[in-house]
Length: 322
Ligand code: NAP
Ligand code: BLA
Image 1 (spheres, helix red, strand yellow):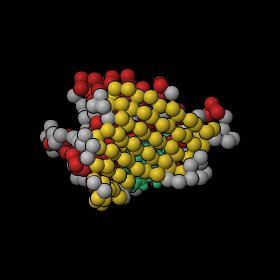
Image 2 (cartoon, helix red, strand yellow; image 1 turned 180 degrees about the vertical axis):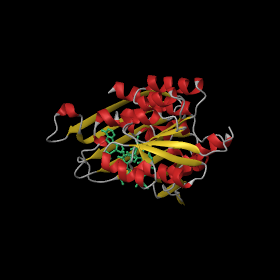
Image 3 (cartoon, helix red, strand yellow; image 1 turned 60 degrees about the vertical axis):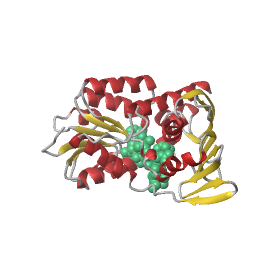
Image 4 (cartoon, helix red, strand yellow; image 1 turned 90 degrees about the vertical axis):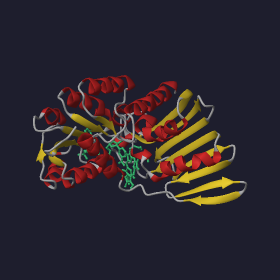
């Protein structure tokens, strides 16, 4: 597709991801940020004004506007699927933060809808662009074949915020909301043969259990890839944790990889070789620019939707197994 006029963009959400996307749409001369729909009215006003964009009352109105070509869906996970559907039905291209939907069946329907309507549907997976994943990809050949991968992310938080990320209805099952943790593994180790998980939630005090808010959650998952690789993924956050951990260990016949956000090691024959891990900054900008590149000159994207939806199916299998 060649584009002579700027792509007209609407953003849904005003948080961390939305701001980084808006910065790019605002400064890239191939796009024009037209409108923003948020949650809290004052926050949405402040956000929109800083980009000279219009405030729209709600996302339903935004995705139906005639003067928008592309919608960036940067809001809570439980709304992703419904917003993407309405946007695609109204002929808009869509960028969606992971997960595409909390429901893998809906996610598949959305891929079909985008293909039928010949629209871009891009599900962001910035973890694939980050330094840890790049180091993993580069170092795997030195240790393959892999027998076992263990990936632990624990984020203590005191007190846990009463925000959407601590609400199961809004965030989804832990490894659905934090799909990137599984996606790193499916991207490198492929198809999953068997998968099961256990999850625990600690209710937030002063919240009725049915409100869905918790003060901590923990999910431990066991995976067997069809290649034979065994995997374990641990995701925990909140008030029941006191020591942060963010570590991937990969054990291979010829060596071991230890990867953390800012350091890495390749261990072979007792020799420890340090690995440089690239920054986690600038990933949303990179992702946004690549989606624009795709729309403007058809440059292929770095991730396939089918891969995202496959990982979502695995995550949903984990949810149902618990
Ligand atoms: P965030 O900073 O917390 O922003 C969340 C947005 O959703 C805000 O606009 C917030 O509005 C709105 N919101 C909160 N509760 C809501 C509710 N109950 N109903 C409707 N809207 C509500 O979150 P974020 O980090 O930008 O995450 C946005 C999306 O990006 C998520 O899908 C996340 O998984 C994905 N993502 C984020 C990152 C990252 O680095 N942060 C990386 C990869 C993917 P108010 O503030 O006005 O309530
Ligand atoms: C992923 N970060 C996420 C997600 C959320 C947050 C909701 C998606 C769900 C998930 O995968 O867990 C939220 N991250 C936060 C918040 C902070 C944070 C509120 O670090 C508070 C400091 N994200 C940031 C910042 C960085 C960042 C400051 O907000 C670092 C520069 C990076 N977050 C980042 C990356 C991912 C992510 C790279 C992709 C997921 C991954 O790496 O697995």
